[in-house]
Image (cartoon, rainbow, N blue to C red; front, side, top):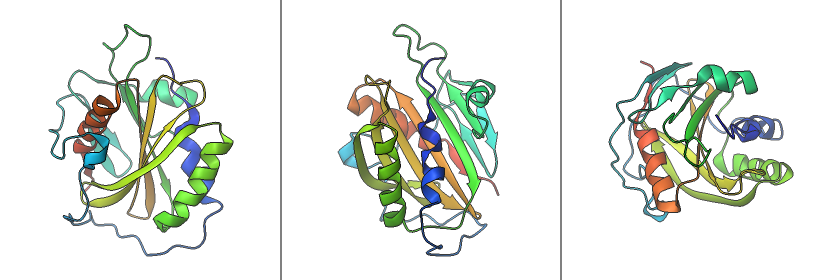
Length: 201
């Protein structure tokens, strides 16, 4: 697998610079809100992308059903970054040497205001050499509000790094989708990945 990069860890370094929690996390799966889109129209993604029928990743407080044909790649991710909780990839996407992939990190954390998290995260991404950093509209992650940021990771200039960050059950969850598809197709892929996410009961 190519280009499983370190960007997924950035939000956790950023948390060290953040202030005390803005709200208390809950252990229950959040209620849905119509105020947040599944993925905003500005990303080019459909708002109701169907969940995939790929392998199911069982993580720390969630499950993630991968897109059709994708395989569990958790072991490969963890060899590169021990903090990765789960990961998956499209094993058939090999013609260009870049496997579309997703990884998840879950870490104990108080709930932090998104504005505070944005500032710290943007600084960290810039320090890591990421470019084209863009915070898009917040999305819904099985009922929880999730921060959305797109960037280009140093060393992967032909690909998108799309991250979603949400708080639940006294943890922060970071989903990182990496793909070299076009903008619209990358947004569609991210929407499909999100549609497979379920909080643990």
